[in-house]
Length: 131
Image 1: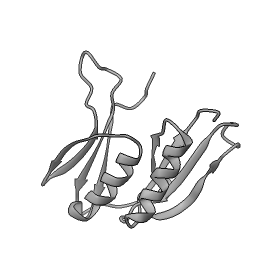
Image 2: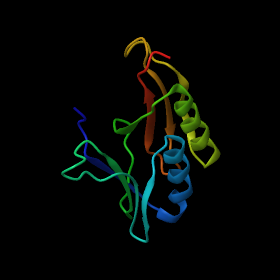
Image 3: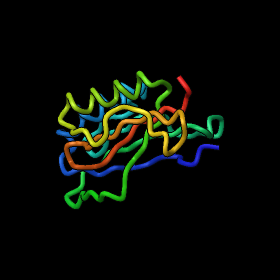
Image 4: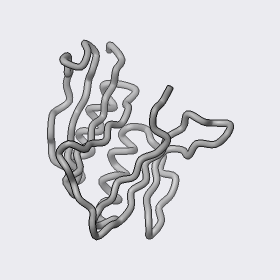
């Protein structure tokens, strides 16, 4: 079972956030499904025939805030995708909040990287595969 259907992130500057989210979502193999003045969308919306899809929406908001206890974790299909996610984030104005590597305190194959987007949101990419 996949728990999340979709999530939304708010940013102060949507135009400024666009290259960053385009890069990190592309690194994870996630398709951009819309690019509007009021929102960016990545992934695939659930339909009756595809109930396990998921997507991310990025919205502009003057009240966009960050909180260290909140973060968004994206699934990666390989450790190479985790590294590509991290590199794309840093190349597009993000900062490192934990380099790619094993986090064995979660489980022996938990390979993840943590970044902060230019707004300060904490993002993670994780691969659970053993290699």
